[in-house]
Image 1 (spheres, rainbow, N blue to C red):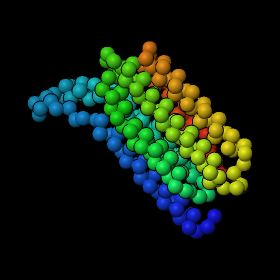
Image 2: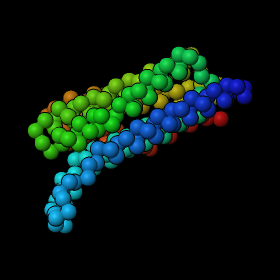
Image 3: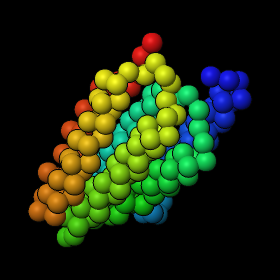
Length: 205
């Protein structure tokens, strides 16, 4: 890799890291301080804090999802030797979907445990269907345009490809299942995130 190519790759990864950091930080804005007045008792405040459990569930889930996506994105970048203009647009599209995640997170937090939670969970899982598609497009682009290091093995390429196909199928199933059971749809997403948390991407020497 030339110095110029290495510098360009580092710039793109740094920019991407910034978007991931902003997206994951915005998740905490879903928490609202209970406005009970200074005359409220400790028990009343505790009850109000306890009512925030949907926000906590949505926050923890999305924080974990974005964190795992960032770790995988970082691992994939270790396989990338250089970048070009089409890749930059595809990477930007993927980042746009990542930065959108706080919105379905807020929707899920608002309706979880209430009427309409199935639709909210389906919308939430459906967002990750689109995120998954952009990751697949990202991976297809780096392979199609031969942007990977020459020493990345065919086995590594096949392993990443299989994992993304699996992820897309699981997200689609989760979005459909969520219409009938929000808990089941979200549980399927969590299972996928645990799988990806254990998946190690590395450029093999």
